[in-house]
Length: 211
Image (tube, rainbow, N blue to C red):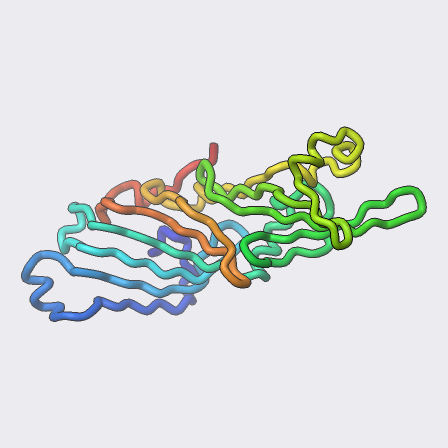
């Protein structure tokens, strides 16, 4: 757990599941271990985590059956990713439906035009990719693909139409892989996979690198 950048002051709860722990120990492995922890950090952001491991051998050199980690990052922490969401100044950052909606303003002659962009977060190459999908001008939604084809708007919008990424591989043990990212309610949920990893694997004590 320490290799997951867990704050020492964080609350940690461990659940060994149902059934006799003694009988499981005699069999050489625990059926399921669940760990709840908060204050797991990835750079400037923190989140609450649930770690679930199944078929956990008492011999730490042997692989676990499955190892799944789900990290829940609230909207306040997502706002700390401001510099990774766009290359221009953002006025607002909110989580809505399955996207991250960012808002900014463009000045054209004597007018200020409010603009919002829906970013779809996905897991890619060890990081969270933020892919612009829709531009909202007033009540009108416009496809980013259409706007990218417009030289005039592209010159005005600049980096607002570009995909960007926040790499978390450098904050994760090498043996773990970020394999899913999605917006659920007012949280950004990260899914991390470590199936078949031995708890004594050196890959759990050495962080990965960003491409």
